[in-house]
Image 1 (cartoon, rainbow, N blue to C red):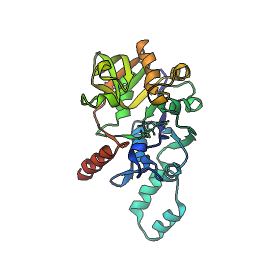
Image 2: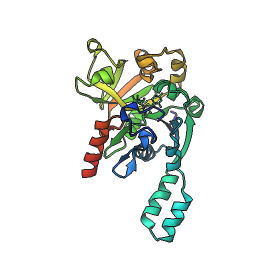
Image 3: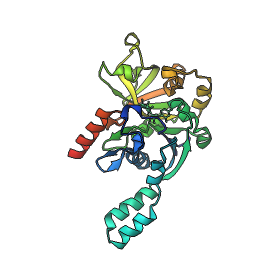
Image 4: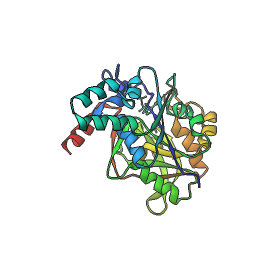
Length: 273
Ligand code: UTP
């Protein structure tokens, strides 16, 4: 069985729902208390044992590259002033993982962003952690999914799901699932941004998946979907209908950092904790 050693974090979206905050600062750099959202996501991957990470970026998102790099002037200054705790923390961020960056160049949708990672991925299964979904919990969500993936023999793909409110599901994707054992579900079908009459369950994919490189061939044949963009869900739906997709409900709390309410809830809840 091939192990998952690589992760992709698509973070190239325009962040229109977070404007004007996200005009000059990537929304992924907006903080939850004192850490930018993207750092929580990288830490989740690292905690799950994944250290090779590709972040898909775009124009105007260079702050993410700076964040995971050294800042020698700042580090020198902190060392001179004996501020060792924060110095150690900053150096730790720069050493967190082997992070590479790739520009999407045109905002063609999540499917298009993932497709850009084809060469990075090669012929191994890989994890995708959506750049605006921060999950905070006792265990790394992608780690829980990796356990399910390995238990099932490392075949097919796994999506991380949660049940969402009935009025919310139309903004996400709806899944038709059959429960198996140990909390694992077989995914029979999925529909991105369903119309009310298309809702199959209140389970939606929220921010995490493990995929096989086969997804790239499927993406090549997938037409543009909702919003005129290449949707990753549409490609995963093809694999689900072929019986190759599974789902598990991860235990952590997911915060949608892509909208203003999600950003506020994350800061208040995590701040109080
Ligand atoms: P979203 O649709 O939530 O992000 O995509 P967005 O496009 O930035 O949001 P709005 O609607 O304009 O506010 C989910 C994830 O996929 C990434 C986003 O950065 C986000 O992490 N994404 C989306 C890309 O990397 N490229 C794209 O072309 C679209």
